[in-house]
Image 1 (cartoon, helix red, strand yellow):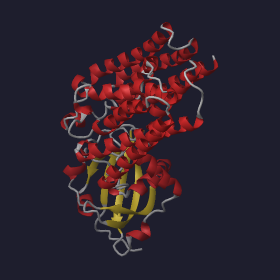
Image 2 (cartoon, rainbow, N blue to C red):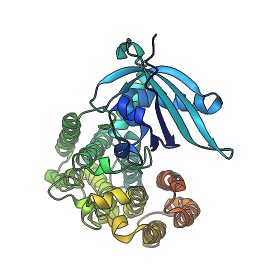
Image 3 (cartoon, helix red, strand yellow):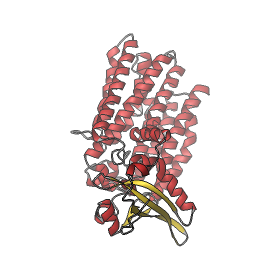
Length: 428
């Protein structure tokens, strides 16, 4: 294969892919100016989405392992959207013995079709693309409250187990959550919020980046979100049909969920930007309303005890949202997305994180004190020491990239506490 050696693009980035240098030949080859990308974009911008998901991480690992770097042929994308074949070499950037980033050198292969250099897309990569578009792993915030509410209701003898009904509830809640995820991505992209954000923690904050990677178009993402919402509504009708009395009582929960899924970031309300409304909405929907709605769907009874039961998990879910807003704060502020982390600033918001954690575990003990849960639920308190450690970590790293450890840890604490509560209620 012949190479055009006159133009050698040189791009350097940090360990997260944020572009640090972009030479004149890179401007010629990719069509962007240095001002457009340095400190504002990541190197994933130049590759098809499936290549990013299926191959880039492996290339980086090989470049890190070999002092001479890693070379391959691949397909890149210009600013115009045109794809082109290229030879590509990536090396690890080492400064004073520390790995701080990567350097990529690219030469266009003029006489080669981009189809010939396009890396293979495996079935696993296609599945990963679905996970990325839908942000599937975050569904634990729905699954744990639903399962916990069912176990709590059975333990309280509010209903008998109905596996068909449980399946409808579980799937309905999941589709509603997927609708929220995809509507959120759609509106954050169309409002320009995601385009402003180059400081996100990959897989945690800043959205799925699915549109940016070319995995799905704006129109199809909105359609997908609407399909998820319709599926949730259809399953809700099935649940209503199974209820003997007060069939339409389920509408309160369903409409609250649908309203929140759309208007959390959707116009004209855009509740996430209203100085605490977004946090309140998340805390209610993924805690008290989720547990109360689940118990109603299983029993036909509006139980305020079930509402109270969901408070600890709702607070922990709010903590996930809260900490994920830290890396996005600067771009969210520019975009007018005035959630509480924007309003408070990072230092004061780190204290807010501590308050959320203390409130979550205090509320769990309060439920036991007022005999809403049995002592088995207190098994969830075993997660409290980890929560306090993470709070200390957040307060010392709120403005550093090391904060990402706390983002992952907060998700883990929610799951750990929830699972322990479920096991404690069921088996204690």
